[in-house]
Image (cartoon, rainbow, N blue to C red):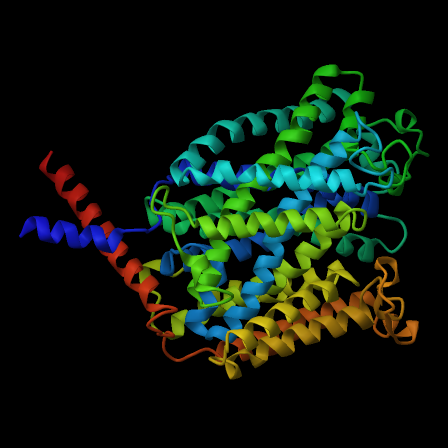
Length: 586
């Protein structure tokens, strides 16, 4: 009888993800995933755009993302599943909201490994100019092929199971962190040009508020890596470790990002870079820096070769580690697609040998390789970052709303509720809504266009009908943010879209234009305030009231996962009770 029960339990457990990650592994994954070269390039662009106030931008960004992270803390306990944030809306609003959110998430994830690979290519430009990267910082055709090859190397690191993945990142992640911090401390402590903080003005003298807010998407891109932790919740030994790791990661990465900002501001002498003193904008336009990893230049010209060595290791190792971590968590997001019945159900399949979503992993890397290749020679790393931020936060905004709906459904247990969500959830929606707007034109509409194409294709081909009425608020919300980006943001010059296929031999060109004055109908500052207020006062309550009264139940799209979650929670409760009994006996 006992053998029969064991055999049945084995059948139930077959082809499931394995719970192998502890708190330490989760924190290392979160921090190591955050500290990519995208963060370094983004911070350079922040200082170039707003001067030393970039330091303050990271403090403000830490506050914004902490609010977001706290919503993950609660929902990761309610729904501890692979790619969790991508799946939260299906339980509260149905498949249409889930589809929109999923498309925004996958765009975010698909862009990040290419961003990191492009950062590596830019690093090679210091030693092999013009071969893999142009003088303008764009990948060459050879660079695109090399970058695609680099992405393929992320597969074996992720292939041998989550336990080996965690062990590998524990070792490499610590090495990466040591060199990262050594470079930052070296530039601050040994170059120490502290006058750069105050001598030329802390804020950009021209439109200080606009400049400051416009760099926020770059800061928020850096913090976004925290969500790899709830993506791996289904593979965590103890559910409570996910919540702890999220908070620890936000705190640690915040301190390091602030340090990076100080390192950039204080880590160079103007004469060494042939830049006019106080001209922070030249940090991304100077002939000595453009098309190169700026930290290589900073470190080399500091005169301290150990700082240069630390910068070299950081410049190549940091983006590589971030890239393969995002591939791992991104494959879980694609797996969530399969569980929701989007694209193909085969994406949810789990390899029996190593307990990983193998097909999702291969498809994710293949798509990322294509993105890297076709980027040659089009977008720079900075435009990639803005595009990713716009898409990511359009998807993220539904999470606080799903949290409140989950409470209203009676699904969230009292011990899982985080105090103060009556204030945190709407504020999180309001502030998160500003990130796509601040990303500006054309990054925000470009992200929306990709979301729209994906949603229309999948909804038609997959016959997605459930929850359309419950998603109307979300559709109108995205339209509202896009219109506000056109009439009140920066970058709109009157061209809505321009498509010219003559360069590839096709006789087709399309241009949709409006008067350029439309881009300044509402001042940037007022548009920021309008989006913040309308998001909280209109779309937050509308989104909450649009939620299902009861948790969405479907025999294929939700019930199997919910049954697994229920079973895991029961086993966890039994384990905790057994440990208490052992301690009492001792």
